[in-house]
Amino acid sequence: MNLYGFVVPGADGTSVDLWDRHGEVVLVVALPSRPEPSPRAEGLQRLADTFRAQGFTVLGVPLAGGPRDGAGYGVTFPVLAPQDPDSPLLSWLVAGAPMDSGVGVLPAFTRFLVGRDGTVVARFPADGDAKDLIAAVQAQLARPVPPTPERPAPPVPTGPQPDQVLTPAGLPAVLEPAPVGADGREILEAELVVEEDDEVDTPVAAAADEELIDERLARLEQQVAAERLEADLAEPAPPESTGRDLQDLSDDLRDLEIDAQLRQE
Image (cartoon, rainbow, N blue to C red; front, top):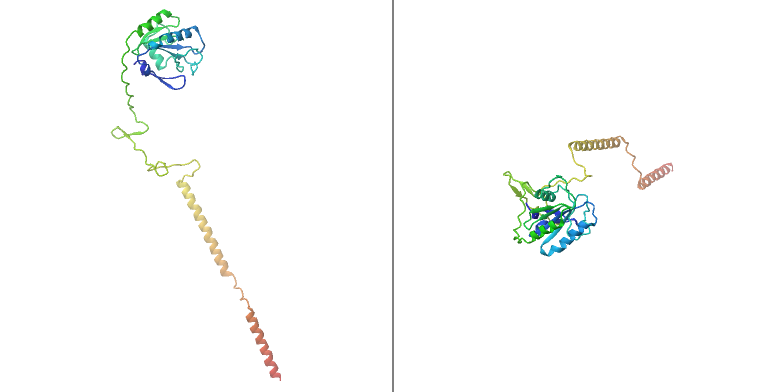
C-alpha cells in the first residue's frame, strides 16, 4: 500500500484521488483543529512555493473538529476535509513512521514526508529543525521520477450486487432490463402496488360483503311480495261511465216516456 491508493474527502466536498500525485514528493501535514494563521503555516507555504516547480506538494489534513472547507489557515496549498487520527490515511502515515512515544496521539503540525514512490520516508515533529526537513525534501526531489504504473482495476465485488441475483451454482446472473411500453414505463411481468389508502381484500372482508348482499336481496324479495299481496287484496275500482253511456241511457228513458204517453192516449 502506498499514498496513491487513497481516495480521501476534499475540503470542497469532492473526493480527492491521490493517484494523481504519482511521481511527486508530498509532505502531509496534520493541521490543528482550530484554524488560524501561524508562523508554522507560513513556513510550510514558503516551502511549497520554493520547490513546487520540482514536483513538490504540501498536503494539509486538518485534525478532527477542523473546518470542513479548509479555510482559516492562511495557506494556498491543498487542504483536505478534517480526519480523525485513526482514519485510514493518517493511520497509514503513522504506521509508516511510528512514534517513539505517545501512541494514539498525533500533535498538530506533525509532518510526514512521502517519496516519489509513494512510501513514507520520514516523519518530523512540530518542533523539529526546519533544516532537517528541507534537506530531506531536497534529497527526495533529487531522486529520478519513476514511471507511472498502470492504474489497477477496481476490486471485483464478492457478494451479489443490486442488479444481480445468484444462480443455483452461486454465480452472479445479470438481470435483463424490463421491457418498456409505448408510454415509456417499464412493463413488469408481475407487479403489486398497494397505496396507503387502497383497501385490500381479505377473506373476512369478502365474507362481510356477501352477507350484506344477501341481506339486501332478502329485503327486496319481501318488498316485492308485499306489493303483490296488496294488489291482490285491493277491490277492483268500478268502471268509469263515459259520455256515450249516459247519452244512451237518456235516450232509453225518453223512449220509455214516449211509449207510456202513447199507451195512455
